[in-house]
Length: 268
Image (cartoon, rainbow, N blue to C red; front, side, top):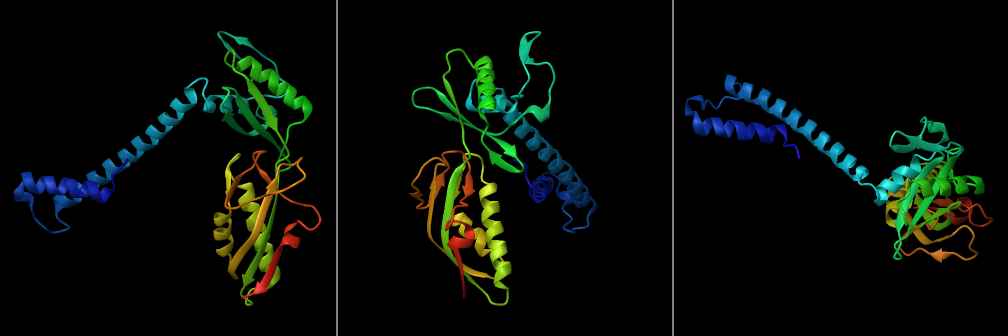
């Protein structure tokens, strides 16, 4: 990790004072101190470049480990719907790269206890995550069969996302109109859900923290929260955290379960 310019400058000046006491002028504008400061700045900049390069190398090494979860995820994201692969030289690949045909926008790899892998995927549809249709899934299955390691068993999993409902009371300051508070709270909840990592963990306390930062919000109490897999009938209560079975969440649009129905507002 790169040292700060101040740390480097201190090490340089200490060494100079130890080895060349004739340059021990304590003035901050002494020529030798100014030169040492310039050198410290150059060394600090170089160490930042080294850190950036090291991070890039680390990411490349992880991605280059063929056959691990990161590799499978990267390969699935490169899937081009409608295109066929062929051997070009010694590599099995697409003849040309077409980003518009890369329909898988989100992917997570889950390693199962039986040695197989579950590949969770979603595509983008008008700015929202959505499941792949049957034809797209079948094409993706064919693609994975061609690029997988021999004998690796896998399952493609795609769904419309888990349904989420949140019941809460927001206490607000009357100096901000309730309509504005409500609009900002709704937008914050939706933004938090949309910005969760795919197959990531929803944490109620972080959602509370985000809402409490809003202008006019004095406090928020989440009385209950629950989610369900999109084709399930019953909800499961969320005590503190939850990971969406489908990989992502959608706020419920059912009658009595929308944010308009489940979030109430009271003067603080």
